[in-house]
Image 1: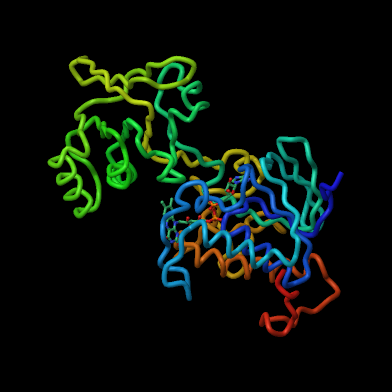
Image 2 (image 1 turned 90 degrees about the horizontal axis):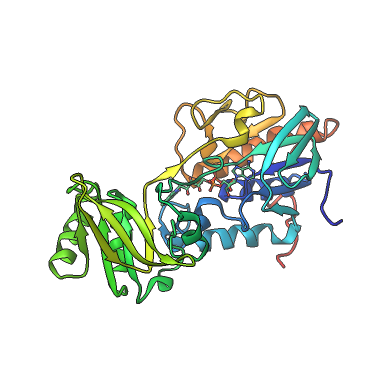
Amino acid sequence: ADTPVETDVVIIGAGPAGLFAAFQCAMLRLNCLLIDVLPEVGGQCIALYPEKPIYDIPACPAIEASQLIAQLEKQIAPFNIPRLLKHRVDDVSGNRGDFSVKTDKGTTVKAKAIIIAAGAGAFGPNRPPLEGLEHFEETGSVQYYVRRKADFANRNIVIAGGGDSALDWALALKDNAKKLYLVHRRDRFRGAPESLRLLDDAVAAGQIEKITPYQLHALHGENGKLSAVEVIDLDGTTRKLEADTLLPFFGLATDLGPIATWDIQTARSVIPVRPSDCETSRAGIFAIGDIASYPGKLKLILQSFSEAAMATHAIHPIVHPDQALHFEHSTTRGVPATA
Ligand code: FAD
């Protein structure tokens, strides 16, 4: 019953762009509601790289991704902004000033304007086509993200993939793993020259065993607990690698998902917006962050912050048509004392 069903602005996506848009709404006295399909806020920063330092946030020489999200949360904490987590927005109807947003859980939210901050859309890992895969995913034997390196200590790990992620995680996990295999269907890996050199060193030192050119073929184990990963080469020769953990890094599938059906002009997996205020082709619906596109767009967090400010300022007259907005600096309108 405490789920709000009416608000001024619905923000779809609670990554860094959505979280900062919530702050900007609060500063302009616009009520807002954050919706995200994931169980926690933070978008890619939390789902993909919580322990990675970020070096290009203004005034933060280095900040871990999870710390950045914690700071964004702290910035909006005084405003108690409501959120619907584990809700995917499936449908948007109505017009500027009077929208309805429906989630997969059957919740309907009415709002005067919409900010889409959905990043890469409903993003997810490319999963290898292996029989019984979902059982091994359920137990955590197969995982696609490394959230905490410590969770992988003393494990027999198979990492699969030939790009930066596979390489970087092999190097990051090798010191604490019991055994680490790196499987790739080609002999050559794609990565930064320095990472390739470190890989050669780790292979020479026996810390990483390279299994090339092999592909994943089958998973063995009982009740979803992995005991071995079977790999196969081009001639059909198979090998069984004893392992309790498989980490496939085959890239991210980016898919606009339901957004593609919302009557908004899209291009591949982005939404073209007017650069001056981030409005989409549908009046009253704005897009910011990775999903927004215009000439000169950089998919960087710092740019999404400025887009959040522009979009919310443009939304103000939709919510308060009779009030002129003279606000510009955060000092001129009081921020509630930090909780
Ligand atoms: P996201 O972070 O992708 O968040 C979007 C959210 O929307 C997600 O939580 C998703 O679940 C939700 N969502 C999508 N569709 C729906 C729907 N229909 N209903 C409900 N919820 C939905 N950027 C930098 O500036 N500096 C860096 O150093 C840096 N390093 C990076 C390292 C890696 C490994 C990666 C992958 C990215 C890095 N980036 C970096 C990029 C940065 O993470 C993105 O630019 C940023 O996360 C984009 O924020 P966002 O809020 O637009 O989208």
